[in-house]
Image 1 (cartoon, helix red, strand yellow):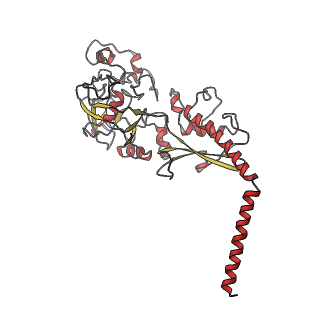
Image 2 (cartoon, helix red, strand yellow; image 1 turned 90 degrees about the vertical axis):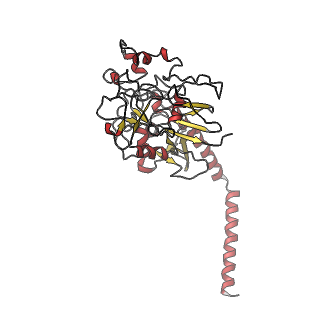
Image 3 (cartoon, helix red, strand yellow; image 1 turned 60 degrees about the vertical axis):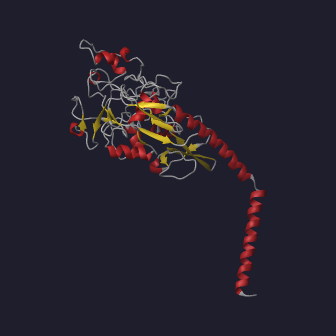
Length: 395
């Protein structure tokens, strides 16, 4: 027998022996398989509880009742709306960290979150950083351990977007009827302006004082980059109009005529205090108007409530009029890319209405970078933004 034949024979024996061993191990020693199955069942139940907290936020008021500290994440929450804590990476990080010492999550005994990058229990992921057929555009990864096994779960941010119903819409101010439709498409748009907290999730190098406040100091390029990191794009003007103008007839997907009130909370514009403010010299401002339009008068009267939901559009969009200005991409009229309604103007300004826009060149925040019909009151412009996503070919 040659040396080569001897080598092949030994190799065959090793392979045969290995296959017998593997077969024996899996068939005759099922304890490990059973144990792994039981561990995964426990991990799946725990992941459901984490998903519930992710979607509900602090419904049990554990922050207010001081059962949660969260000093590392939220030094000053102020008047923030409770919805800010829904689908919030930093709130979930706090819950997971403090659940090791307190009964924050009713976990099965001996289950624990596993630290990932930068000594954190949560990790921001997107399709640009991971691969997988069922991976969402963006979300938060959590790794749970139990009995020597682990389970990685990805929680998608499904809290902060509205779906635009499929129908025909009208773009522009109330006297303009430029029509478009999203039939056979799903369009999702952010309910809220992108916050400093959102930006920090993607880019921890930014430094912000108030996490729940809208991100108002970014350049156009930085805004676009943020939306792209989530598989989205800057919200477009005609989509914003669809989400904020109150439809006259929701049952008719293609109405012959559009009735567009310039104020997002009413179909009859003459019933709004803004209608009087913009037309009558004897109009008297009242503090309660700040709940709907945070104009310049409100700055010294009440604090700007981040994530306020006192006045939302018919699709649940907040910060529609007043507050910071809002940049949006306008494929119809590129020189009208800015909703100028803001705390830079008094309540009497004509900018406080839907469809009324100005222009921002995106190069800076001094007033030289803007084209405006009315002179603003502040030293520089504060500009927020929101993102949107289009899913085509939906039957």
